[in-house]
Image (cartoon, rainbow, N blue to C red; front, side):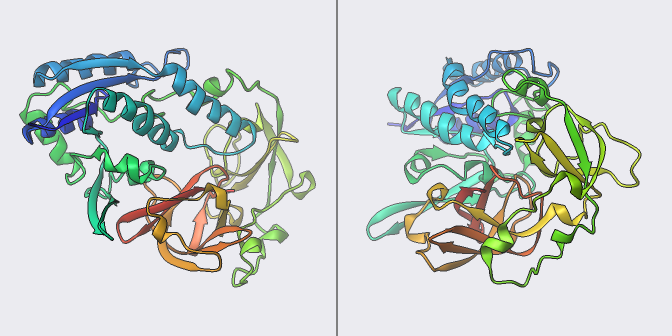
Length: 391
């Protein structure tokens, strides 16, 4: 008897081909489209609104001859993802809703629904891979980077658990994007030439200011430019004081000059370049810090501005997540690994230090745009082993 797989069919080419490959492998495939958003006011309509995606997913399911269902998770999505985004931005932090969407929706709500339908596995169109080994008589699952390094999406799954991973299939993880499109074209799938979706998980590309203004009201404040020779940048980067190295630069109004106004510090994030509407500087302005208490945005000229770069970051111990508990260091231990702090960033050599005060990632090279609220994910070779929220 064939195994039953429920696939999240998003209306894009990746999940379409994943469904086809599962069918070819002999699985009994059921397709589900997750409706996670109902407010079209802030969606850029030409960027894959959910109605168009749902229709494309239905056409793919019909082409493959597999059952198709639509499940509305919009209320749960608001509670678990959208409210989290508002809260994080209001606090001057940078959330990653896609990571939470995978942990809370695709591999929790969706997984539970699939298991209720008698599924043995759930599948997605992520570019990542899964293997397993036997450790002390028990099967242990490993999350590996996708074969296509330009599309590797393992970072987005950095918060899933062993149990969730055990039920997951990633049918296209061993393929390049070009191969996926070729398969879709050969099978005459309507999504073969469809552009990749952008923006929030299962929502599409949104106008972020309008999105945030649903709950976070505009509030005019100062944009202050900090010179590149600011005293605090003379940090001793050879220090062995991890707390000192991981501490972000702190600014006051008198440290720079006012160069413009912004509609609300909570709308901006560290490292951001666009949206400031301030011109006339020799180099583009980048956001160095946001002060949501005093409603000030601090900026600096050029992406080499020292205020954008640090060699260390801190994670609260309670926010650490390891896919294998045996790989988590004990207090006082170190782990040589590679890490990234955002999707599509190259993996960077670093050392993970776990202390009673917190866990630190000390990088070999300077990192640009470290922002609180982001997820840092760390790897051994090509295996993602853990993640945490940057303090």
